[in-house]
Image (tube, rainbow, N blue to C red; front, side, top):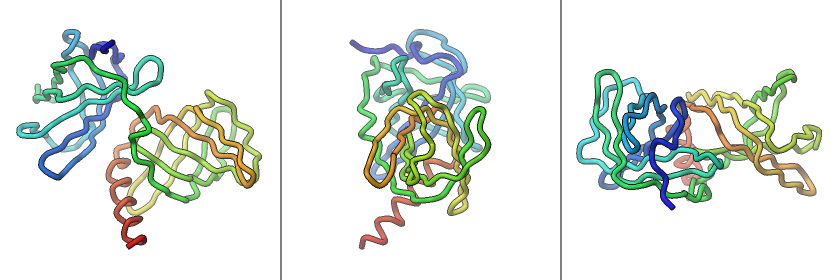
Length: 203
């Protein structure tokens, strides 16, 4: 069963996966208003005016059951200060495991409701989530917990808020996996940079 674009609630975030030739780019945005079932007014979080001619664009957003939905080959055109997106076909559930996770290993500041700031080790990050490693096994988090991590690295500011969806108990640590629920402007460029650096170390 397909999913219509209007299932994405107004105010919710999305990602545009843009590709042309051998180049690709991910841009974040917010749904401002639905105009029809498959047409919406959107804001794209980018500080320059964009043209979507001669590029392929897929749109990904979180469904009601927290499973990403992908709309293939959407059309995006500028409209006043914003953009209009049209989905020619229904969206389909997208396997979030396809989002490449990048090993980070950086200490970040963690903030959660009712608790002061702590420092945690960020294990890895993808476009849709992140994982933290608790070597002392002292966090005792439960599924559904919301928390934020913040750090600066390689000229990028990473400020992510996530919902805890996975807990892995290991002998040497507990790994908590989070689904990202906010927008971070530097995230896509940061992940690209870290991937390039990680490949360089392996070469």
